[in-house]
Length: 302
Image 1 (cartoon, rainbow, N blue to C red):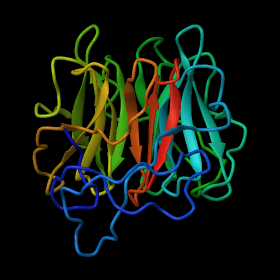
Image 2 (image 1 turned 45 degrees about the vertical axis):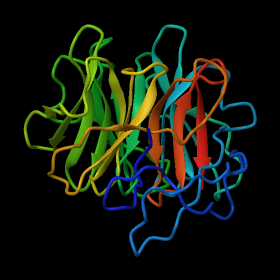
Image 3 (image 1 turned 30 degrees about the vertical axis):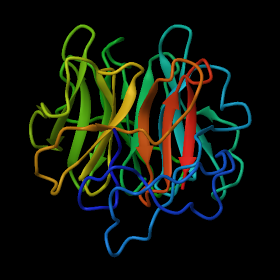
Image 4 (image 1 turned 180 degrees about the vertical axis):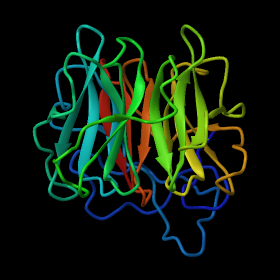
């Protein structure tokens, strides 16, 4: 099975085109090109094959389990979660001056990471001024969605986190993925061990489950492109866990059945892939994988 061309107006088979000049320093050389099964739209530059995914940093970012990756729209800021021995997580931040430069030493995202509670599943707003994340700082074990803002993209002066109104329900919510001006998809627990995708609008009442995307297994890691037309997520409906994609024609249309994303080949470990993120220009893809043993953050470019 194949994936969906982000910049196209219809669902195709692979994420394809020419490699981007000045690839990320932590990405390996581009893989062999595969035949395109979908033509790009007339106003989009062709995109080449994805590079072989590579772990971020010289020896991964930390020595602990890492996942829940998100980047700023210019791919110069990276926020991810690091697992603690207690089972909680903390958000870490790293940045680089330009694409291709080395990442700074990761540090806990202060001042709003609590250390004592769990902070995880970050997602930037389209303008990079708001960061959404999940935390159980009020009720241990019960994750709710929080938003924290800063005055400008790239600023390290974060304000105070606030609960996103209408999403604190008494069940676990995480992976709040915003798009457009007020639309979002969020991951919500539906059983003792299961999570599904729900879609809604801010201030528009409770979000609704997405039957065409959900399965009897776990769906997580939701990511939306800013036009609200393409969704990436991870699912345990297959083994190993894979990333899936679905593309729709309009922001209010129903989501078609998703397809597995097969562009990112890594050998080793259990082969699980999760927590997808795609840059706005379609040239950088980030995700988490246990291909090297414990979970790490991977980047691929084109």
